[in-house]
Image (cartoon, rainbow, N blue to C red):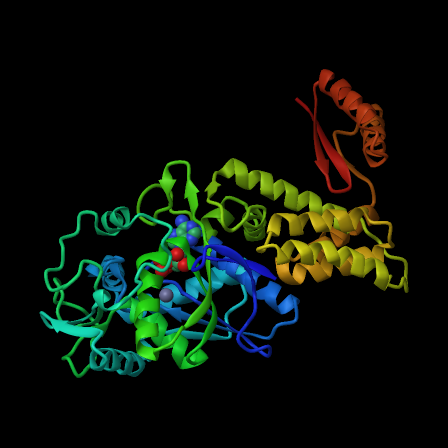
Length: 479
Ligand code: AMP
Ligand code: ZN
């Protein structure tokens, strides 16, 4: 499998350190509010990556943190703790907020068929691990204490900007807009490893440490949790593109300085979902959540399909019109699959199945080209093979795509069968001539003779008849 590696800015063949296991780490949600569908785009694409690796025969161990402390309102360690801000907003404790939004996050993930990682670790569980890393960083001369906090000294590194796609000055402005410079820092990109002092004094969660009572910085969480569960080497680290700097840059700085060797080989970054007005936000404009989409009648998996239709390394614009298109594609695809009816005992043609899988695998292998992988479903539908083989191929692809295609098709098939077995019924006003026309129209529709069906509808309309279709019949009223 070839994947784009943000650290080298090249598509590279993916080779894990050990052939037995892929060690995968994912930055988890900051649980101060619901996830928006932009956050969930990142988790959908990471889920597809994990499933694609498993599909290709790898054993994957995936770890994700839950950020329940330390993520400040600015990624550059300034402002208020997001968790505390959430707790104040809802007049609840930080732990209540964390529990509520962690549950909400996993409920959204379930609706979107995002598999729960093998290990999910709240940041507040691993304080000892962070203290151990920070102590070693101080001993090795990478950490320093200033104004009560412990900082990482980025000037000690030969190369700090690993994901150097961007202009250093722009980045520095981007992350610091309207935030005062922290005068404790020796260098402008130094970052906090451990806080005992910050501009706000009412931090709810605090722990004892060699540097005083305080709490960890956000970046140290991911290094600590990854090493706790995956050891000193990581194969692939994922996150949204906004995490590349400063979060992942800082993770690499502290992890490699602590370990004394390279830490992670591949970096997988998902580009953003934006609205027509720009950045997706939890506070401005419509707060786009999975529940909101559901309340508007969308199937969450139509949103998953919408994400899969575009490449993860492209920005994606969310509009309801775009989502409607994806929902329409999803519905038609399910109807096509529902129309496949294998004969009893029909055998899967293994050679044809292998040929169908080839295109699908090739698409995944080319930097996770999910839109091309979806076209493999249409190819399977058209393939010269029996229905059982087509269904086997689609079921196989769906172990990666996660669109519940066979399950939904089965529901449609059952509903169609139930409608077909119903007695034809007319709910009308007792006029046999009109009843006869209604029945004629019904038969024409069944035979897909749309022209006749439309002509009869127009004829009835001209006679002042209002017609409503029922699952197996029609209702009519004179108006
Ligand atoms: P957070 O809960 O803020 O820590 O973010 C959770 C994940 O969502 C991180 O991997 C972010 O990089 C990612 N993310 C944030 N905004 C977007 C967006 N608009 N589109 C896609 N991913 C995003
Ligand atoms: Zn992280």
